[in-house]
Image (cartoon, rainbow over all chains, first blue to last red):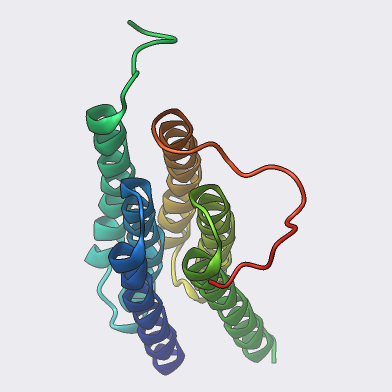
Length: 91
Length: 109
């Protein structure tokens, strides 16, 4: 069912575009990082749907990397901007 | 007959997953503060991703593809949970405490 997969991938792309509004309106930097989180999960679903629809198996490897990089972006943000990080746990 | 039933079930699962993605995006845009937005995103979107991956597994042609899709979901679950916890702790420490109590007044956003 390549047609259905393509249509659903397009709808998820519209979802990502709507999530961009939160970056514009978001009052705190954490809200902008939430939009990055949305990009991570929804982008992975778009890539998997495209891999099935267009018969490109390499896109599944791209999706696997994307999951990893989305959480690394959040970790980098928290390490950079957290005011009292390293207070509990590791020093 | 069996193939057709499998395809319909796969399409149904894909639609359900995309609906959960849509619910997560609506929650991200409509909820009042950062904690509720984290809640909407990391729960609804992970369920949506799981359902989409399950629907794609039903269409997959080989066991290697099925295992790779399962691996992607098993990686996405702890990754998203970790990001959710880190963001919530960051927001709690640096910016504002979460609102407590009953929602007495009407929010306009």
